[in-house]
Image 1: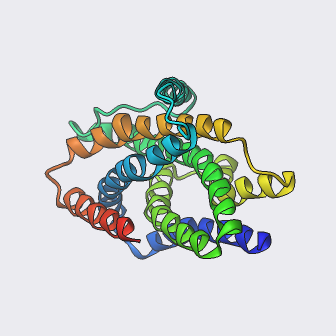
Image 2: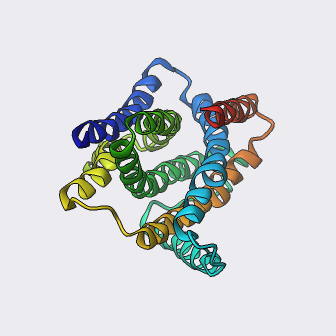
Length: 255
């Protein structure tokens, strides 16, 4: 049962690869990235509100102790600030890049930046999610499979978004290849760590790690994706992307 649960987490990473592969069939990548930006924003909010936050509350609040709220707030704030600090180590960017045509390079840097920090935070998130998926799969294979399919549905559009965003930097680099590899294997690495230890992760520690992840995803949603959507809300690709995100979110709720 443990080996099958591990394979489920490895399968999830393939959805990232499928999303990257899909981009090969689109000539107008600018429209595709606009669509996936709107799509990802809605999906990110769904992940935060309907998946991650309830899971944190369940892990940290088994005895209905209200102090768990303080833990969530402090470590979410830590995750938010951690990603803000990471901003200083990635290519310069600005949200003010659609006003003039001569700001094209700045716009490309910004789009690459979004893809990069999204990928880094998702690696952490997926490692934690891989742990949860592995534990679920060991205890109930059907539950593990449904969770893997649900997470895979999240990963597919995120793979599109990240690959297109990072492809704005034309030069090849080991950092880009490394990020792609980590994305593909992140869920598996999280599950493998528990498999090798032969024991479950401490619930309180898991709640802290998930709270840090929550802060990171809030940063991406509010400080990176949302400004992009607001500035381009009149474009139909953004609107269709958001509608598609709502549709998929409803579908995932029914699973």
